[in-house]
Length: 457
Image (cartoon, rainbow, N blue to C red; front, side):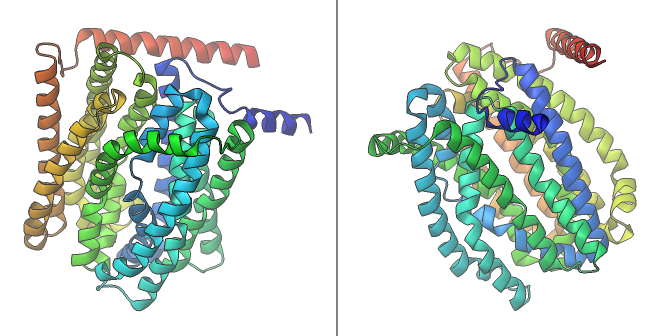
């Protein structure tokens, strides 16, 4: 009973498990990301093995829409919440209350949009799939609220609960999928339900923890709303264009190709995203840590993160390119070998995209998301015609080539903007000081782990 009480007290200590060190926080997020990757991989492999390419494609088409539609109506509130939770901590209750109201209103609007417009993209799918997607739109408010609550956890450096919330949903999904397999009930719709429903209990627990600590406040909702929208509307273009950019490929594949092709592409995306854990780890910690610092400090943090992150991601991707054919056949089966070329191109793209994802945090942390909006707009304006040209001509590899080309354009744009702002100070190549920093922090981490083992023994 005492251990249960201690666990509950630890869970409720919102902001009480803060991590001051960038590397320490990053190591915790990295561990969470690896767990998340393993859970998603396990679930994806099981679904692909039992459903085959066509069934996997139908399932992927059903689960992608609630999050996509909801994220197109964020109005930049997630980034704005991180910024203002850090800047005006005295009004945390007000911001939390406003975020709940925003999630409810914007989520319902997103649901209505999804019900009426998503079927236009599903002409290759059965009426049952279309109806399922329309019904799933009821989750849009929960999707937005979950994103807003993650912002609170990031701002308060509560990476323990943030990491737990990220891994719990996929774990529940995996358990539900295993139950479906054991009972012989593996269908695209039931597996999609396992994916979508798994986030509900996690969102409820996170809401309870934040509510117990921050509470609700209705004192100055109008003023707090203006503040969140003031920053958020500038960041909204980043969120909107980023959401479109991340999922435009899947939308076009769903709209223009068969469910079987979508199944191949889902497997290709899953494998190519594995090295992304490096960028995700850095970005999750970098933005909250950098916000509120002077520009020179933010620049230094961003460039060091970029050099180390791209180098490590590159090593992972190069190894994955050589192993991709073996990995697909061994993990998913020979039915999915048509995805090999697409995976290899996407892995090259991931090296470039990881660098872009890290570098844009400089502008976000300095309250200047407008630069990123321009970059995303340029990328999408290039991406759409490239995909419409290359997808019919070359199929899935054409989609991957278009994504690689636009990632290179984004990287060039951000690099030019930084070099113009800080001539002679933007060093993008890994150097000796970066390697020494890596070794130094690794030694610290090993010493810390050694001390913990000694204390526990």
